[in-house]
Length: 140
Image (tube, rainbow, N blue to C red; front, side, top):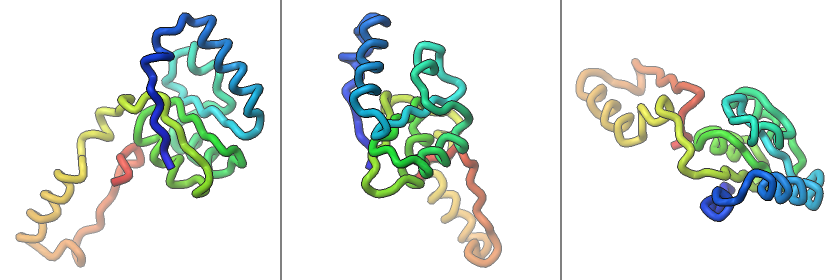
């Protein structure tokens, strides 16, 4: 399950207050929380991460984690992959639901379905086409 947070309230906090709240939340939740930080994040976000790395490494860490809450500091598709790989009772949280990736947005579901229909007019895609998906793609 992916959770949505109202980020505006937190975006207006000064850095010290934000750091203090994150530290308190981490102390309160302990091992029930894991924060994953993609290596493209800014230092003020990155410093709070329990695990850092690329999107696939972080999603695998999410899958291996026993934490109840997985905070994925990255973009939308990264949190989706973490959510897919995690257990049903875990909650994957993307702090900024507007965080996107232009490459992941290049082939949305509508365009892929349209392409598949066009291929079907020329050949039998079920027998002659093997779809390949870029790892940094939306789950749909």
